[in-house]
Amino acid sequence: MNISFYTATAGAREQQSRLDVHANNIANVNTYGFRAKQPSFSQLMTGPVTGIEGDLMRGVGSRMEDAATDFRQSGLTGTERKLDYAINGAGFFGLLDPRTGEVSYTRDGSFTLSELKEAGEVEVTETDETGAETTRTEEGLVSKWYLSDGMGRFVLDRTGQRIEVDAETAESTDIPELPVGVFDFINHDGMRSLGDNRIVPVEKNGNVGLGTGEAVQGCLELSNADLANELTKVIESQRTFQYMLRMITTSDEIETTVNGLR
Image 1 (cartoon, rainbow, N blue to C red):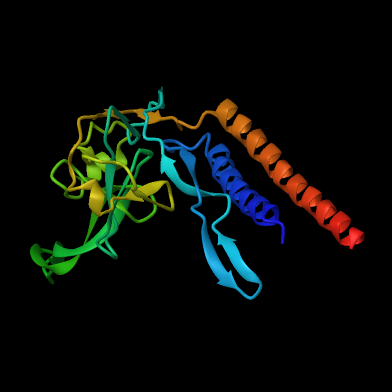
Image 2: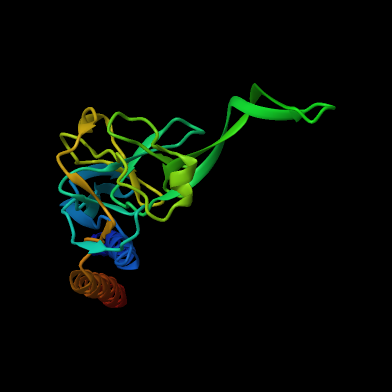
C-alpha cells in the first residue's frame, strides 16, 4: 500500500490534537491566572516491521510530543476586592485539599472565605432557679473561617499552614492584607495540569520553596493566552489538516489509476 496513506493519517490525527490545545487556550482567554499551552511536534522514527506481505514501515509522519505550559507572567488588573490576590513575579499560590491532603498550585487568586466546623471548647451559659447565670465550657463544634479557593481547598500561608480569619474580620468588607504564601520550583517543565486551573509538580520539578514573586492584594492576573496568536494557530491547524486529507484523496486516486492499468 502507498505509504502516504499512513503519513497523511498520522498528520491529520496530530493536527486535531494541536487544534484541541489552541481551542482550550481560546476558551480560557478570560480566565484569571490561566497559563496557555504550546504544542510541540517531533518526527516519528521509522523502522521495518515484518508483515504478511513483506516488510512494512513503522512510525511514519510526526506526532505531538507535548503541550508545554507557558509560565510567562501576564498583566495585572485591579478589582478593589480585598480577597483577590495576584502574583507580581514568579511563583504560585498553594492550595490544600483537606479531604486528600493534596497540595496543588495556581496563579488564580480569586479567593473567598469558607466556614469550617472544628472540634473545640464552646461556652455554655445556664440560668438557675434564682435567675443567676453561670458559664461553663464544654467540647463542641466551633466555627472558623479560612481563606479558600471556593472549591473546598484552603489557601496556604508562607509557612504552609491554612490562613485563618477571625469572625469579626470575616464579616467586615475591609479585610486587611493576609499572609498569602507564594511558592515556586527550580524547574517548571513537565508540571501536570489539573482541573480548576491548577497544577501539581512532578519529580523533576524538585522540592517546593518560597517564590520570589509578591502577592498583591486587590488585583488579579489576566490570562497569558494571546487571542490573535491562538486564532492564527487555529487557522494553521485547519489548513494543515485539509492538506493531510487532500494527500489521502490524491493517494487514493493514484491507487485507483494503477489498479485500472492492470
